[in-house]
Length: 468
Image (cartoon, rainbow, N blue to C red; front, side, top):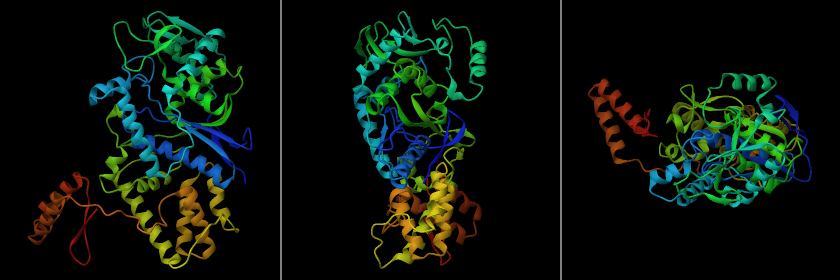
């Protein structure tokens, strides 16, 4: 069996060839733990987990899958200026930066467990400060840096022949256009694309997470952290690096520059780059800066489970835009529940036991899965099978569920019992009375009020109502 994945470096699907067939090494960009990850982040984490699970359980290869925890906040503009995110949220919540990091890292691990996402290691940026300093020193020695007094050490991107190659075939034209169209600012940078490797703590300002370095009290630039953590956990070269689509032009481009100029002797640092496309709301990407985010607890508070959200993510290919709506999540919840019912009606009464993909039928599922993780097609096959089940189909679905899907569709109870607030029940009862009085305008108003509070009321054929 061969896995084909879309490589952002080449802009084509390529057959995956591990550097070492004994151990596949994957690095996935993780959260900056100054707050809960939003569902756009969770979509990228779900995709990364699916990739690791597919290589591990379908290809049968040993995997070391690392996701970093950035507990030293990078700056608010994701570049070289603005406030540090950890410091900003520390003040907002009246906690220390360390307490903020601990709080949201704990939440993050809880969300991964609920979503069925597995990674092998979680290095934290604060544990790899010396490795970050080492890379900066290597870059200085190789002649790729310059100092802006009172600001920091910067990477001179004009000295990198292939800087920006991750952006695609016309990257040099794109970089030239960026440089030509840049505003002239008195910030000391030689080129608009230059980026901070290490920042000097401002005079007279005490930051909670600053560190001593060979050049005094400093804190790391955003990009250097991932190069240091991936190098320390996976070595100078590894197989796959995953992240969000918006990492392509800045974060991952700068990671490549500093790594290949610092410690790989200009050899390709990572063979395959994979990026998850945006999750949108009303045509705009989900972003904390746009104030249009939802966290997993906010999804659960609206009567959905983490696995409903996981199913929702799988309905779109990871390289496609996906629009998030309550109606879409309702449909995902219903489809997951109906699939579970169909399976239970067939397998009730006998044990499935251990199983692996087997028989000619397995190819119908394995083929799309190994075709760049085409999960929408995989789900379509599973639903088609569920309408005409036999023992072989069921066992193949069972193996897929336990190792790849992880949707809880073989669990005894797919829905948790959730207590409905008294206010919601009262509103629903008032709606019933309004309908009896043929006050349909008021009934519609009450339905909308219930929806605004995060619930849906549905009339039952046999009378009464159901709140979801």
